[in-house]
Length: 606
Image (cartoon, rainbow, N blue to C red):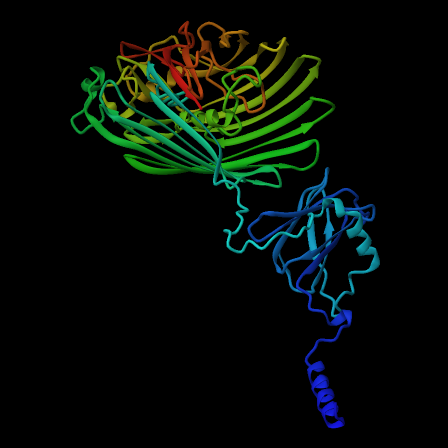
């Protein structure tokens, strides 16, 4: 090779070398970033063992690590994207930080402060020097957490294959039930429309963290053929493994017989079926609970009811319940509600032993459909029953026995009670036909009652549970003297509240082998008195007069039949207790909020 040729080759090599990146470590192209952090309590003490979860923009879990003895954690090799961090540690509220932007070569330092009332995550200002945060101490954190990092491996190129799906199945854990029943129709007063005839409920999870439930109750009234329908949709989303706030939408539509333009008092008395206006209700509500610490829990919520019937009216209901756990299972509870009965706090099963009922959430939704707002008619104006409840209780546990002491005060306005035929009024302006065609809803005005009771629950083995309660509460009684007139005001003047004693008993049992479940309750009070139904917000049993029996009998399965069939039977107020007689202008009638009824049906659970 000549000297001239060597000079040219050397020049070309120098020119090419100018296009090659420097081989220094700081000049290498970096395609990932780091997320570092330290977890401390309000006193600034590092917290060891906190679970730190890294989620991508689709709220999918990417990695998890535990903080070391210095309260530090680190994620390296994080692809550029937007992430969120969640930190959980027992006895502290979870800390969440969203919209953490990871750029190539970036280092994001997070300061996590955990507290019992509030927790937060702050992001330190980015450093101008790349790699300034990734010191030997942080590298040691990464080495010690290798067991919680994903395993990297080489895989053959499969660009022709479809991209992997990281989302879970759209619908999972789908369950439901269908109920068909017949018998006496439930009146509007007292417990509301509990069973119209055909009820269904379906529950499913969407994308693994969202729960959606749909329930309904539809029928045609046998005495008039008019339609009755109720639907409810409930939505909730899990947060950090716990059920988050719950949102519900409930709707009712009922046509009342005997309220048409041609209806009069005589038509009411003879059970006239003239089609009247429809009662339509829409309720939008939200419920949530907050675990402030290991011992203190707060449940709260509310809903707005809008009712359209002759005229429109809206009503707001608020409720809350605080529970403080003492030693073991001992607890103190305080609850308050204003408006309608809070079904979210009354979501107990049908008095059956714990663990023996299926689909408790679906049964709670059907119970919420049963609590139709109590509507009355006074001087041809629609009134809504309003309640204000304040209750407190103490629970103590000794072995298999539980003791309760409950104190409550309840004020009710525009109270709705069922009045039997014949009506005592010449005009229908103060009467509203009930759904069963036998009773009418009557507004007795306002009353207030206070109660104090003690209860004991004893479990006998795994299948039997007994509860007994005794106490004093405000009852209703009528003046033995007949009212001079036959107006609504005259009848209301006969009714007054008086303190009286009561005894409640409940027995639940499951027969082994055949699986029959039986629940029976009985409430007794002094003669000549009617004990209004009181749904307890903190105690083990509701205060209700009369004998009530419910039976659930599982049926044999068919071949290749998935799910479970049950035959159900329910007898309410079997002994016809709690009927208060009232007289006006020579007419006699009775008032009650728990008419005797019998229903039976078939349930399919899947």
